[in-house]
Image (tube, rainbow, N blue to C red):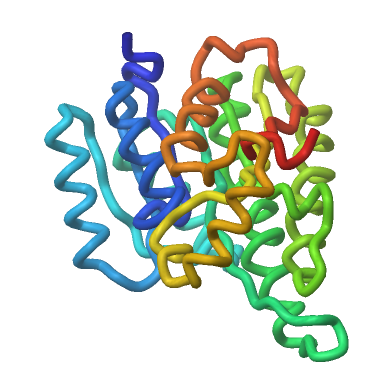
Length: 248
């Protein structure tokens, strides 16, 4: 059963890691997928080709969600290419970890700009389209760290906690027009980035998780399918923890 048949989705940061996993599962469920990438055009276009082979429309856009004007242009371009915009998955994010005593102002500002301001930029840009349609689902990617905090990640935790407050406010503002805003808070998800870490460290993390494994991008993607589909038609303003029990 294809739960997203005929829906048009935008996924920011969609060319690798969790974003790539969401793009693939969305296409498998029948969604047309527009996704953004930052630098690697070749791999982004390759992914677009892969998704197209599943019988959906797919296109890669180079766009920086941290830029207000680029986010506005992206929405215009996707609306022109795809028509309606049913789902936005705000997934772009970065880390610049350090203890506060060593954290520079630039590293704090950059993480807030990319992780949090991008959510403002994208939501503001797409709301006009969704208000006209009188429907839409916005899914914002937070983190277990945005709920629990984490030493050495004050900037990242602040950005991810901010996403939760922003999303709950949007659920209240936009709900009367049938526009839903929800949050997914991933735990430890194993991607290309975590492959570079020391195996013993990763095993230690896995052992501390009640389900005794790291998550896969598909685990996050499946939650995104639910929140993007009509199965969650009465769900808004919620934080869905997909973390193997790290936060209970």
